[in-house]
Image (cartoon, helix red, strand yellow):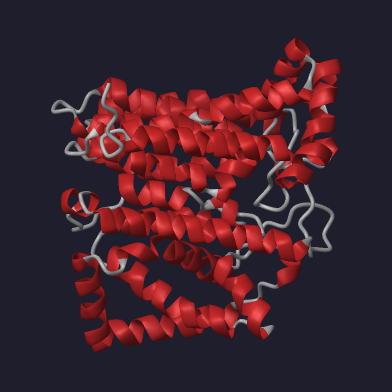
Length: 423
């Protein structure tokens, strides 16, 4: 039987990337730098406690210094009681994590109906290269399973948008899976604002009342656990570089906007040369009022910026700036282009503005970690952002697919380099 390399390239790529993550599992790969430590010293002891005494551990969860949701830990404890070996539990977790790629693939097919299975699979497979995905699939962490259910909620939101009669069933499934995502990783709960905004425009008051009621019902167990039983685990962890007794909630939005904007810019930098985006950037640079607004906004942000390496995290440009110059100057240089890039998307689109605000407020803690936004940024950009990019033309270009993978591979290599320097 004749085997066409070109026709079956996506299958070969998927198989190769799957083998790479299995190899990473065997050698204990941890490109995030703290996933293995967090699992072994923060998750695993509590998994064992849940396995031995569920009721007592559940009611005293806030005393264990863990600010992550107990849902994934309970699930892992359930697996541990069945299989007993940590190796098997982690291997099951890794393979369940692969559903993220499957859900992303189906979401892409809904958003871009012109995509064939081959190109769709190649684009979705880029998640395999994500250091965050690889690290958190190999060393279980609630963020990844939260992202998995979040993408599943996006899948039904896209189905809702594409259905001619705006099927209310898809709306309810979107709410259900977003709720599951939020229970596992509370940061995703703020996306309910985005979805409600869209539903409010499409439904009458009767349906809106049902949506609010369903959300309250789904949120009730969390409110009861946190505020009635007073197991407020969200502030029980420690923040690096912070002298307080627990997790520092930070409302210095200058820190968040600077760091998150530069993280967004890095992961979407390959789209700058796309014609519609490039023309927008030129337009903003040629408009004095927009340019002055951008410079003023950047000046205010820089004046209020007080993030330090002691807090850990910060993103790639923050670390590059300190690595090469021991200051923030390189970060501020990239900030200008990051804000220019983001301004071009949000100033004339409330949808994009709302998404950007949600990305900022989803991080209430002091530390801004790259793993919170990668591969989330690319997923949201492709599935939710409103752009004038001709994606049919874009995805049919091998050059553009190459650029997408290039950014992912560069970040992968930089993550390896960072780990080597730390070691």
